[in-house]
Amino acid sequence: TYNIPILVEDKLGNLSLKIVRGTEEKGLVDVALQMDESGVISGSFRYEHGEITGDVDFEKPEIAGLFSEHMPYFANAMREATGLPVSFRYGMMFIKKKMWILR
Image 1 (cartoon, rainbow, N blue to C red):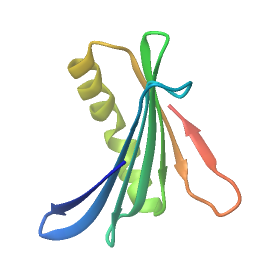
Image 2 (image 1 turned 90 degrees about the horizontal axis):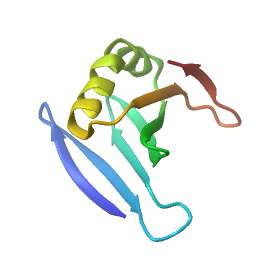
Image 3 (image 1 turned 90 degrees about the vertical axis):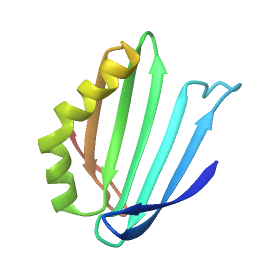
Image 4 (image 1 turned 120 degrees about the vertical axis):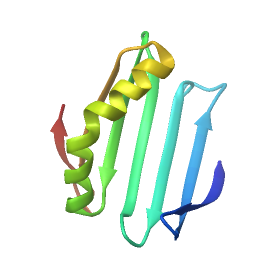
């Protein structure tokens, strides 16, 4: 696991990155971004059966809305970088449950 301090538009944040190798969870990448403005954004991406799938959670509804508008660009950038099919599902963080919006 790597904890990386980041600066976005003169605002400090923390990026946590975990790459899982050598176990039954192989092919899994977990990433979390924490900033005051965005709250927590966490994603879990998996390479399996020749494609990349990802679950992305948001603490703040307005950030989830921005992601939904830009999701095709993120998926396309990942497709171009990897040459693999990419799909996301995303939702809001709740204490006891998640609300998923499938795309």
